[in-house]
Every structure is written in structure tokens, then in C-alpha cells.
Length: 451
Image 1 (cartoon, rainbow, N blue to C red):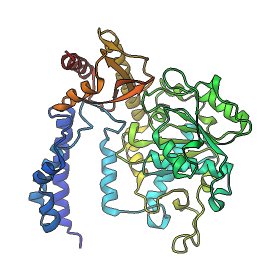
Image 2 (image 1 turned 180 degrees about the vertical axis):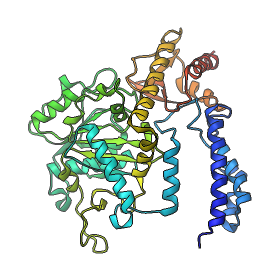
Image 3 (image 1 turned 90 degrees about the vertical axis):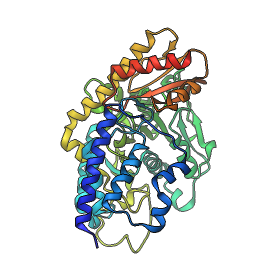
Image 4 (image 1 turned 120 degrees about the vertical axis):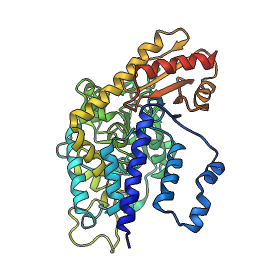
């Protein structure tokens, strides 16, 4: 039986400790990350004994949670400048709590009518934003599954026999070398093999060059994949030029908008996605710039029937009777969390304008970093940022070593990538607390550790 009193007390403790943790993180009063070795950390948290013996109480839970949070990576921290993972807003956290308690796996409508209905409306809103008024969609657990699902829909359009007869050997996918690794992974999962990926010509920054798109006569093209925006650089492909090329040749046009599609909510940045309505499929992650906790990613298609064709399955214990509102036939997942609730809660609290202002502010802060860095001797910033991602170098030394020195004591957390074969440092501005003072401190610290 659920102990309501114990849950109420423990939930109160959770809210108190999390509130203190987020506030401390936003003020930058603790290291942005810790990297205690797993064995040492397991001993510190008492994991083995708790696993075997149990016995946690609300009182001991507070101590455990406090220690657990102290060792976590603080995504609300102003110095969190690493991965494209949201600094989640509190309404999404409330949705996680609700789902954790009621656990409605709403891929089957009768198992969660309210959660499914919320997802329908969230998808309707997203479809409208990308310009698919007659389209269809589904939410999945992450962008990798979303890209895989979109590729399944593309395969069903080009080779409908593949589900029953296997994948034809002549299918190819056109993608730039900088496409997210989940595209390459999806190609092999689908049984095409890496030989099926035809690398597209790009400019020096990795953007697809529409003037050098290949001759596809004689090829059976399953899809062309464009980035909005690229994971490594945050730069957008020219969606309109690429989309028009695909339309002329009847090539399935897929836009990986996992990170950058949220710019549609910013009046000043929506132009970066000009032409997205020409796509056949789009993915859009809410757990990046829509500030939901992980995971919640949308698969959106211009023709709803294409998504319905992606999967063909039989299971007498699931597929029978009236399934008009079930989403299970559109996803890899059978059991699926109430993903739409997280998106809805952030929208319900902040509205389109509030989320758009957040996107714009993070893009603006990244642009400010570009301005500050290029004014300092020793820093090289190879392009003006279009999003909240910036690549740069300091000096000619080992950039990975610079990153490691910054992370050693948890002062700053940033990542690294290669651009035109050269290793660069990379920041992704996600936390609302990141400001000019943070950026200046980062530049100062890089100069100090490089000296």
C-alpha cells in the first residue's frame, strides 16, 4: 500500500532540498560539476547497504538526497556551458512528479486519456509552428529515437516493401559529415549499412552547400538530412534552398531541428528556419530549448499517413478494437511516459512568448561571448554564432587540456569539438543565470590556465 503520510513528508523534503539546490546553483555558489570516482561515491552515498537492506526513512532520505545533489552536475549553474541539455523550468519538474505518481503509459489511449489528449494538443501546436497544418506527429524518448522514427517513415515512403521483405540494397541517404551521430546510427539500425550514407559537400563550417548537391539520377534516395542547427557549431543549413531542391526531385527532406527548431518562437530568430515547411519530416526536442527535463522529442511529418506507415505490427494483446486514439503504432516504444505534459506545463506557465524570450536571450548571450572573445588577443572565433553554440580557440596549444584544467575544480563546464579538422573549445549557453559576468570570468580563467 502507498503510505500517503510518508509520501507527503518525503515529497516536502524533496521540494525543500531541490529548491535550495537550484537556488545555490543559480547563484554559482558550488562547483558546476564534481567527478568523484564511482566506487568512492557509492561508499559515500551508502548505496550497497541500502540496496541490500533497505530501511530508508524520511529522515535518512533527506541526508541521502542532500549528498546526492551535492555530487550532481548543476545545469542551473551560470558556468554550465557544456551539453545541449535543458536547465529545466519548474513546471516541467512538476509534470515529472505527477507522472512518477500516476504512471499512465499513454501510448494506449485507455491507459492515459488525459496525458494522451495533452500530447495531441502539444503536437498540434508544434505542427502549426513548423508549417504542417495537415500533418501528424508523436513524442518519443529523445532525439535519437525521433530521428530513427523519421527515417522509418521515409523508408516506408520510398520502399514500402522493406518491412516485410527486408531493406533493398540500393537505398541511400544524403547527409553532411557533421550530421548528428544518431542519423548514422539509424542508417545501420535500419539495415542499410554505412555504405548507404552519401556525404554531402559543405562549406568550411560544415553547412550543406546547396549549389553542390549531387546528381541523384540513378540513385534510390531514401532521404536528405539537413541540420537546424548543427550540433557541433550551432549553425543552420539553408533549409529553403535544400527543400526546393528536394521538392524538384521528389526526395524526402528531413530536418533535424532537435536543438534549433525552438527558434521558431523568437521573432528575431525564426528566419533561421525559413523553408522548414518544405520538409517531409522534422524532429524537435523539448528537452533542449523548451526547458523540459529529459526526455521529450517530437517527430513531425507533413503528411500524417507517412507516420502511420512507419511501423507495421501485430500483437493480439494490444492491437484490437477501436484504436483511433492510440499512439503505439507510431513509436518504437510500447510503454511511454507522459511526455507531452512536460511541454504543456512549461507552455501553460510561460506561454509561447515566454519560451521565445528564453531562446532569444540564450542566443543573445552566445553572441555576446563572440563579441567579447574576438576582442581579446589570443582568442580565435571562426564564425559569428547563429544560435546559443559557439566554437573558439585560445592560442595554438592543446584545447582539450585547457578544458580539463577548467573542469578540474568544477569552475566551468564546457565541451570541445573539431571544426575543419581542428580541435576547438565549445560553449552552449543553456542556463538563464549565465550572463556577461560569467562570460568575462570564463575568458579570464582560460587566459589564466593557458599561461
